[in-house]
Amino acid sequence: MSIPTIAVERQLINDTIRTFFRTRGFVEVETPLVVKSPGMEPNLSPLETEVVEPNGTRHPAGLITSPEYAMKKLLGQGLEKIFTLTKVFRNQEELGGRHNPEFTLLEWYAQGADYQTCMTETEELVKAVGRSFHRTFPNFKRRPVRDLFLEKFALNLDQAKIADLKMACDQAQIHTDPSDTESDLFYRLFLEKIEPQLGWDPVFVHDYPIHQAALSRLTPDGLYGERFELYLNGLELCNGFTELTDAQEQRRRFAEEAVARKQAGKTVFPIDEELLRLLPSIKNPTYGNALGVDRLHMLVAGRASIQEVLLFPANNIFNS
Image 1 (cartoon, rainbow, N blue to C red):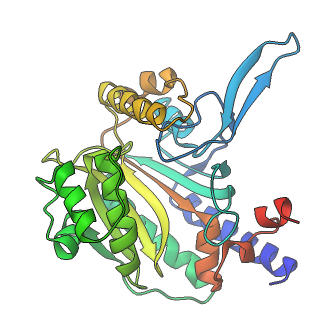
Image 2: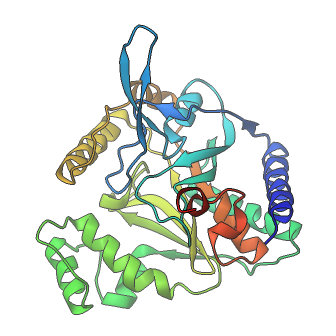
Image 3: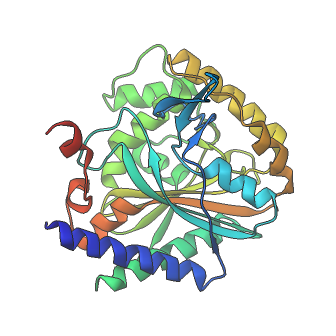
């Protein structure tokens, strides 16, 4: 694919996204790329750096894996509906295929509504971008994670413990390790046996177990996180939530993630105290979503790999 074609296509996508949100009353915001707390998720490896002052003072830092913390701070300071198009960075990613260590993320938040509203809005956005490429999509399905595990493994996540997940892995001939957590086992089952069977039609997979709840509010029964991911043509496109606004609960989850990062031999970044201070100022409910623009570009343009929609793919930069 020619460089001029990629550039023009990306401009069309960005223009469509900006028009979509501005007509709905969203404000476009800019967020920092270099921060002292780039993320606590155990499965992510931020690109680490440091900020050095002229007097030699050094501040450990990292490049953001998501603008989430900064955007929630803006919500806590009075902004109601915001979006951003930004570069984010994740180390230990493949250089090609569906991944690039530097990629473009669309992230947006709105106070006063939950993840069900966000799923509807996400469907409308993807269809709008598709129309700009003369692509149409069928209506998007919604499938709870619990139903998918019942159908595939006869495993009821309402009561499932780590031993049940281990047994399901053994029966599915999926490798396990004595150090595996519930989250590790769940993720392997999902990634290897469920994700490949989601099909080509768009589907929202929603309501993840607590250990996969991330920064989402819990469902009324307290068993699941109000979180969803969109799969389209078998490709994971976004990750959305009804946002957790309970600072005490968020601190507890950060502490758990810090332990998991330490056990995995990863850098443990400081808890973002400003975020915790501002969380209670955010309305409940509030929703947020993070959508990979490069993958959306792949889908609407009919490309098979991320290299085909980037002007400077990492594979060319580092392996040329």
